Image (cartoon, rainbow, N blue to C red; front, side):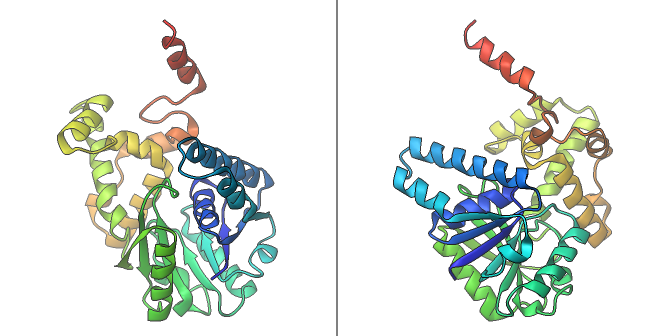
Length: 295
């Protein structure tokens, strides 16, 4: 494989594009919004600058990585030469089915189609195409350039050959791929999301405050980040979407989203991306933190 198309220039998409490009692949980064592509490239550049400052790569390697990325707003043009397409659009089932149906129509017959979905059935996604044997899940972790894990999810019809190819490809990226079967939430989110939801329930029930809950989990369980802060980092809307997928899939009340989470998403309190979630990430708060350094 030489040419990788990535659908979506958001947090996961630009991270996936960065990772492939840094590993020497030619990457076609695709998004229908030109502004999203611009922001995605800016994020990649900033992340490369951080790596450069820490001497994790050279200036030449940074430039090579950026040179490996070409942006497109037209999907057909972007996937024309792709050996692999990695879809990293919003975690919305209808949207993903629409994208995969379109990809099936416009991609070469031998192109492998992968989804970065964190919870939606690969079998269901594959059913929207005429090539279910060539559809697979590649669930990268955020931040993609740093996190080692990639969940490789086999759909019901995913071939052994495609699974082996994607497992080996993940290793060339410096990742540690783990093969899992296609059930709601897979492994990572089937375990993680109920924990985050229970943390929100603990806050909702008045057992303890935000910082107290996060402190208990950091100091008592050796977690690098508290669950409420992690939920903010993931995006509360994403957490809600994943919980809903698992609740619909298992029909088990233990996956039912906490009312507090539902209300916060309805109110637009989505975490880091919106400037406020369980913590305040607003510009005024940032300015306050900076000012305190000089007091």
